[in-house]
Length: 86
Image (tube, rainbow, N blue to C red; front, side):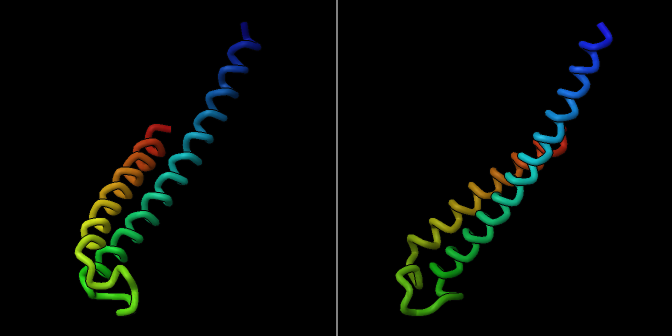
C-alpha cells in the first residue's frame, strides 16, 4: 500500500510539472500571436511597415489583425489558467 502511494505522489509531481511547462508554452505562444496581430492591424491601418507591403493600407489586414489578437488572447488565457491550476 505504501509503495502505491509513493507512485501516485511521484506521478502527481511529474504531472504538475508538465502542466506548468505546457501553461508557460501556451502563454508565450499567445503573447507572440497577440504581438503579430497588433503588427498586422497597424500595417492594415497604414501606421507601420513599408508602403510596398501588400498589407500596408489594406483594410482586410486590419480586420485579420484584430482576429489574430483575439485568438492570441484566448491562447494566452488558456496558458495562464493551466499554469494556475497546476
